[in-house]
Length: 300
Image (cartoon, rainbow, N blue to C red; front, side, top):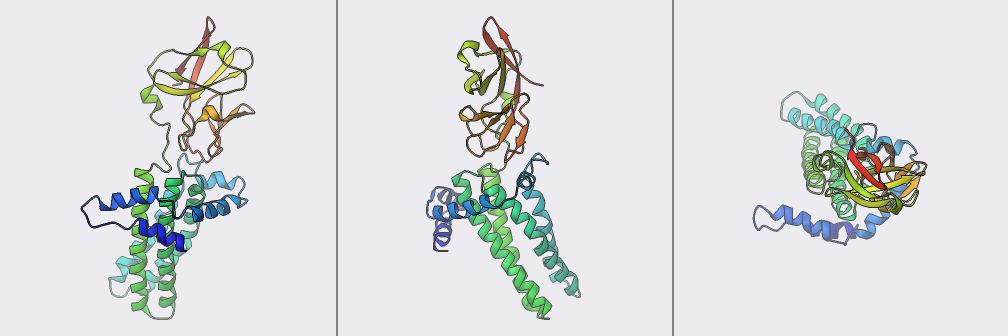
């Protein structure tokens, strides 16, 4: 708890202009005060035996993280409850919405923690504070529901407004995590726009040992080339779509390339993400060998 308080103090904005909040977030990203707690929670999340459900929680089936989709329900329910709390004669409806939001918060939290455990450390620091704000909000809403059930509707409304404030704060921090730090973004999305059309030299076939990934370039775009068999070469974009991990440092297993950072697995033949946490496939290239030189062009 002390380490989390230290992290929150590091994120406390100074009153020195419109950039104060952003500078506070930047300080939080760089602060190691909560790293021991980060490591403990990450180990606990990763140790849960989720099996194939882990990829489902990441959103591999959806093509992007599922957590932002799941949070819409509790946030919508709680915001609607706040509106009804301002109107006469809506006590029962507002209470039902508070309870529905609490029920929906569980799956959203599970998906969020699953994603969080596979982020880079600066993102995990911010994500921990994001989670702390949301947990606080859930606690307030639980108190709100309990008060409403006892007939203390005025107190229930006050707890509800406190919960909405905490949830909105957590949402703002989550926005920083997603849009400033690119958590959950496809880090290989720009590759098709950067690769010139046509065939491009990659490497000499003799310089590619079978089954071992090698970093090369197609134009200015880094790629990873893997020689399969005698004269077949597979080429993928080198930066992992999950967190831009270096796939050239990965391992080839059963016709797939495994990212060394978080274990995302991509099929060499077409870049398909066989397992997460990557939710987007890896851009893949067609290849040919001309006079001992490997050439590649982006698949369309």
